[in-house]
Length: 224
Image 1 (cartoon, rainbow, N blue to C red):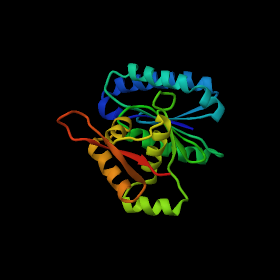
Image 2 (image 1 turned 180 degrees about the vertical axis):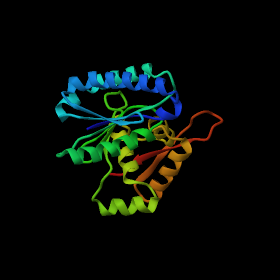
Image 3 (image 1 turned 45 degrees about the vertical axis):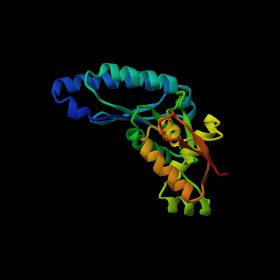
Image 4 (image 1 turned 135 degrees about the vertical axis):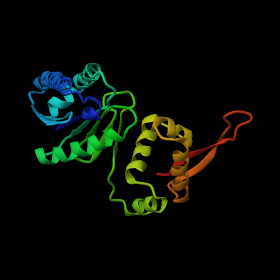
């Protein structure tokens, strides 16, 4: 299942006929995409739509979905964000639950992109883009969960950092590295690294000097 939400649609487009014309354009664009999927389109109103199809068809047409989102953005003459959440599941109900989780996560991201949640709980951000990142937000490791609870850091955040390190092939990394790749402030990244360090999930590896007058940055390594 795919959920497409155009944020602030009604708030920004408040002229009745203009709104209706835009809705027709959007529906026509999504119907054209839906035909490629051999899927079913459901219109929920206020810029919210659902598409049901097979996993194979959705994965095949990810590139087409990105083009469709770009087309929607061009057709809207107001500043709005288009969120895309995709959920896979063994049943339509489980796929919808995952799609709703995915769209909530998509709307929290600063940059637009497609978020997928698979039936095994793996989340994939920025699908089809260079910065695509796959990680799980579940864990059965009690020792890990206890340490993360002590550090006041979510499993999702930890797994996301772990996936980024694996993707980048980092032997060591700084808080600034995390901040730039995960779209967070350096202060937030420093807080996370401080908590992980105190709970024994990362270790201090060394320092790097940014400039002759600047303070050196701490280099960390994730403990396996």
